[in-house]
Length: 138
Image 1 (cartoon, rainbow, N blue to C red):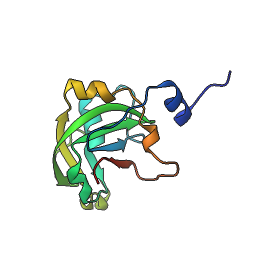
Image 2: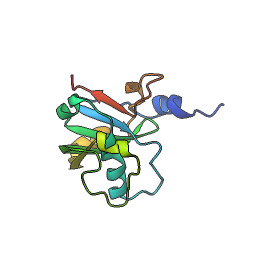
Image 3: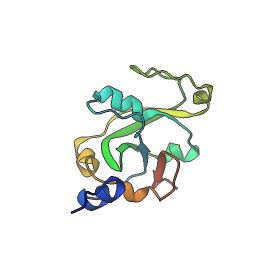
Image 4: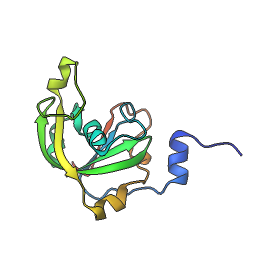
């Protein structure tokens, strides 16, 4: 039997999440590392992103790696890129200041249970280049 990989594996073997709250799904595939600390995962998720004004309507940010939710954060406030303190991350691209980052906290346990470990691959349309998908914010 052939081994399933990537999106096919995520969609066929992992339960699908159905997002009900206004949220941003944020792919952190490039910055994710196995064994990341909770703080490093938060920093990788919260910034810096090219976003429009609809970001203000999102209540949650979901950290997504290879189509699966790793963590869920409640968004408290949006800030211009690189204007808040990160534990270890540094930004060398001057365009980062033209982007956005949030501050927040891990979501409550009931919200985390709904999403962590579930697939959200179906929200990312094939060919979609942006690492961020808006859900229920329009």
